[in-house]
Length: 199
Length: 135
Image (cartoon, rainbow over all chains, first blue to last red; front, top):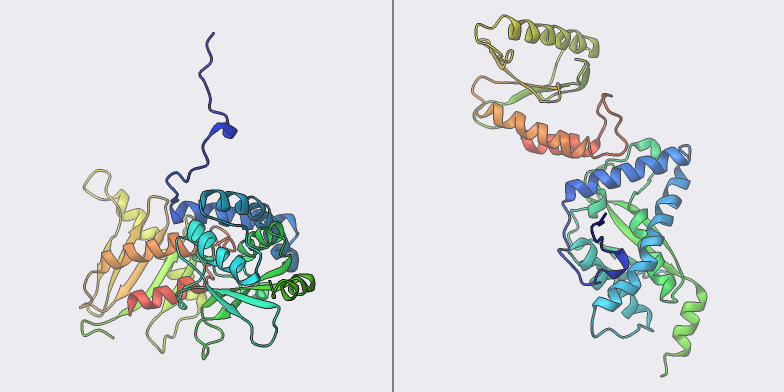
């Protein structure tokens, strides 16, 4: 009996392929993922975000290798800002089709924010999600925060990454919200940055 | 408010005929929540009866109901849900509006992980976008 030749996952090329998925299909999958996470943590709200972030972390650690491989002229980033730019441009473009806005916090030098390019929109994973008020500020984009954390960890820029919901219109705090990804680097990253500043 | 009159209310029923969403766009309504449940139950019954007694084989039930003061448009989906829209007599394009509402439902309610099937709809984005659609 001749079995049909099946392609091994490891033999497939790493080139990009079609690179597009229907937002509806993705949203159903993501919705199921959130529901599964909810049922697993017995509705402890804080742990939902943790779990979403953990799964995103698994995506992130693989993303760094893949994106740098595909980006032909890429050199390993050693500075904080260039690393974050890599994430906000290359990674975001690959995953979401748009780039993100990168900002540094004015109050804390170790904090940076990734925001949406269009301020009236939320990040695509949250597009169809309305979080009930009894979930206290839960943002399912914690998954995306996890991706960022995974990438930064693997690139040796350890940080605490969280996703926050901020109202789109300042005068309407109860209205629709958008997402801000907050990256807070560990002190050793900033120390290292200071040391290599001269070179 | 458009010159052609306005939408009065939107009602959504689940597969079993239970009311899962009602929204009034005109002020000063004297109905309480239970009244809506009764009304929609009556409508559900009438819809089924009208489908059975139709002279045409395999026809649907009531799609449009017009009175002197308002008109009602009904949409029964393939999944057995009902979308009802009441509006001023002059309001144009009700069937299309109903389709759009159905699309909004399938996006902002069904893809919401916090929504339980067949339960009352409490999705902020659905409410906001519904208002934007109708006004």
